[in-house]
Image (cartoon, rainbow, N blue to C red; front, top):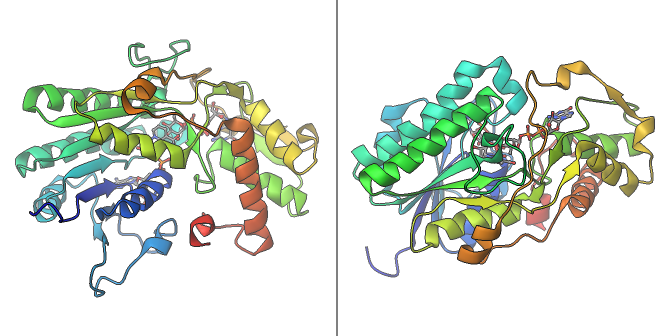
Length: 343
Ligand code: NDP
Ligand code: GDR
C-alpha cells in the first residue's frame, strides 16, 4: 500500500446510532469504510442510507457486507478480504432492559461476539487497531464518580456481557500485542437514538403530545441518575483513541449528572408543557436490578486525547425535541432520521 492509499476501517454495528455517526466521521477523514450489516427481511439501514454509494460507481468509499457477530467463520473471511487498518466493534444487543428477557442471546452477541471478532483478527493475521465499545453499565452498583480505575459491579446481563468483552479486549492486548482499546462510554444520545431508550422515548412523546397525537407517556424509574452526552462528539473520542501512540482504555463522559425526571422537565419545557400532567408509571419499564447513578470523569481522555464534550443534557433535550418536532411535522415521525446530515 502506498502512503496515499486511503485507510480502511471496518465498523460492526454500522446501522446503529454510533455506527452511523462514526461512518460519517471516517468518510469525512478520507477513510474507506466497510460496515457489517445483518440480513433482515426489511431494510435496516435507515441511519446510513444518506451515505450509500452505488458500488458500481468509481471511487465509492462505503461498502456494506452481510455478517453477524454470532458467525465466527464469516468474521474471519471478511477480515481477510478487507484487511482493515482499524476495526471498531460497536455491534451489540445494547438494550439493558431487553437483556433481562434475552440473557443468553445478549451474552452471545454482546459478550462472545467480541472474542469472535478479536480471534478473527488474530487468525486472519490482520495488523490493525481495535476499538471495543465498552460501557459505563460495567460500573453498575459502584458509586460515582466513575473513572478508568473504578471497580466493575454490573447489574444486568448486558453489563455482565460488556465486562467480559472489556477483559477479553485487554487480554488480547497483553497476550498478542494487539493495539486494542476499550472506550468506556457513558450514555450518549442524539436524534438517531433508538426509540426505546429513555431520552428518545421522551423526546418523541413530547413531539407527539405537542401535536395532539398522544396524551400520556408511560415510564419506569424516574430517579436514575445518568451522565448524558451527545453521540457525534463521542464517536470523535473513539477515533482519537485509535490514533494515540499507545493502546489505553478511556472513560468518555460529560462529568454531569441529571435524573430521568430532569430530562423529562427539559424536554417538556421545550414545548411549554408541564411533564407531570402527562407522565404515568408502568412497572413494565422497571429493571429487576437498577443502576442508580452513573457519573463519569473524562479527565484522562482530556489529558491524553485532547477530547472534551460540549453538549450536556439540557441542550441535548432541546436538540432531540426540535428534531422530533420537525420529523413529525414533515410526516417522518416514525423514522430514525438522518435529515440533519442531508441538509
Ligand atoms: P444501537 O443499539 O443503536 O446499535 C447496535 C448495532 O449492533 C446495530 O447496528 C445492530 O444491527 C448491531 N447488532 C446487534 N446485534 C448484532 C449481531 N449479532 N451481529 C451484528 N450486528 C449486530 O447501539 P449504539 O449505537 O447506541 O451503541 C453502539 C455500541 O456502544 C453498542 O455496543 C453499545 O452497547 C455500546 N454503548 C452504547 C452507549 C450509548 O449510550 N449509546 C454507551 C456505552 C456503550 P441492527 O441495526 O441490524 O439491529
Ligand atoms: P441505559 O439506558 O439502561 O442507561 O443503557 P436507557 O435509556 O434504556 O435507561 C436509562 C435510565 O432510564 C430509566 N427509565 C427508562 N428506560 C427506558 N428505556 N424506558 C423507560 O420507559 C424508562 N423509564 C425510566 C432506566 O431504568 C434507566 O435507569 C444505555 C444503553 O445505550 C446501553 O447500551 C449503554 O451501555 C448505557 O446506556 C451506557
